[in-house]
Length: 461
Image (cartoon, rainbow, N blue to C red; front, side):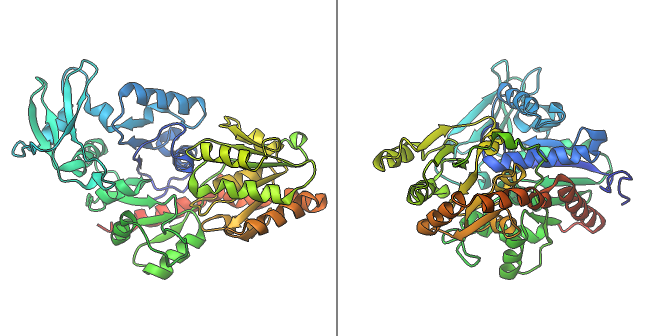
């Protein structure tokens, strides 16, 4: 297959698959998925409008329209019409389920009377499908319970074999319009990956991206994995490429599981920024991100107070389930005059421009988006040395690493940086050049090479 003359990307139809894309949810996953779609659009895919973004969450058409509108306003979508949803298209106007859904249904399959179903209706209130409810089961997507399909009269017309059958029916409908053209599928979700790992269409090449940590505590390369990751690794060699965000994680995976799968590295693209150095505030320490248990924000608070640098203050930006507990920690430590839970910011770039230092005390990471963004703004970073991504960045400069979980070391390093203006300025000056390794062009070059290699090889399924 010949590459596109302008970008080097193979001439093909491009699909990006995501379980859901909802503004304000899923943090770096949503940001990285949309950035990849914009990256492909900028490289000329579909004459610049980009790949089709296929989502699979059973929200309403009105909700999905609002998501597209929000992303477009944020500049995250090039063409909102390219973001499609399975259930929007299944609720075809004119009555009942879309023809492609009814045509795929198996009329010999009958529902289990003991299974509860969630009935989905179209804009006129007519049922078009019913999903089995699998409460408390993280592996609900693997159920073999039938997905019911209704006809235009509102009667059950048949069923599909679980969510696998439903998702595959839509994918085959979407790709039927492509004729004999090669199809590059970028799967951004492991749950979706499990359901399409046997998709044997000879036109299709599946590249599976990874966004997060694959091991559990203590987050060492040989640590245990949860059930989803264990199953996923058994399927990894069926994908035409597996894309990791950092070399460290890729290397750990190959050392543990071997190289039967085509493991590659593509850093997630982060757009350049114009930092506003005039906003910098001396002594301002910032924590920026979701307030979740794994982020260990209380470590950052305790280290900041232990550093005890006169004139310094800490702002914690973000929301999440830890907010109430962190409020109590601040009150217990009597730190309300120096540590502020500032809430969600719709202008994180301005927060980083104001900060003298960004601190992250997370227990693990999957992709270093927040660290790279800070460096782009010339903001030095102090972080625990955790997998994955942060070390890949800060070993090159722009910040300081301390042993994971060592609050005392974090506090000592914070004091040293906040009381050494020359060192802090030197880190700030070198930060943007370090962040350049995550530039959109370098990311695109790496992605193009992986796609070209997969497109030119026989499919793995």
